[in-house]
Length: 277
Image (cartoon, rainbow, N blue to C red; front, side):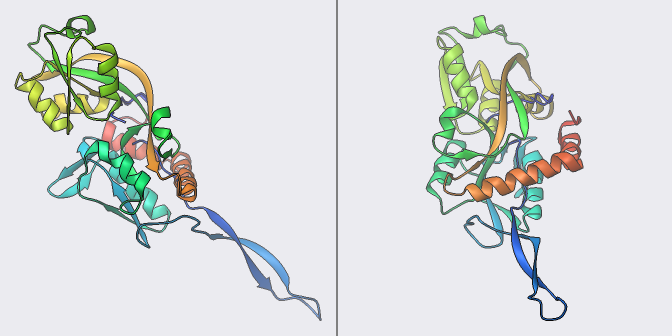
């Protein structure tokens, strides 16, 4: 996943507002005329929730600056966006404890634990066979991080049987590495932090993931590493919703559209990425 807005991740950003229904309201008439019916828009909740009044989110919370879990508190661009979506739907946003990334889509498909999966999911045709996505909320590319002193900093050098490439399991970064660095050994791991730690320690030669995330990691937490490759995959992030809950997808889409038009989306991008593009 990356940010090409230009914000280059893994597979967030997207959201939408409340579905509106029509309610009949009686109006007083004159004489013996029947009361006239007037239609006014009233919020309708034609979607199911795991728990009334709450929008429960499943995320791995390990993809800063999109999502992370600091001091027991969820934070990041995706977190702010999901809180805003919930507010516009008249709900309280609640995050589950951090989940393994590759467990989130099966969880949403099965139902019963979370309403949405929100962890910088790139929209793919394969994933759409299992769940629905909201409209895209953020564009994304991939990148490859290596140690600054590495002698393998291009695709040709990394695509070698002597090289080991770390990836986060179940991501588009893993899919790209398996297709394009097929001569190397691909090692699926649970989290971005584990992958970056292994690269900095010399355990792995490179890590392939969403560009904004590895850029943040190299700048803030793993300063012995750098981005060696930027891969223009043209991915887009969407929020994961059950196929059995189309009303929730529609409501979130409306909220996302409203945030784009009223400037809220631009404000959040400026806060977390330093750009509104």
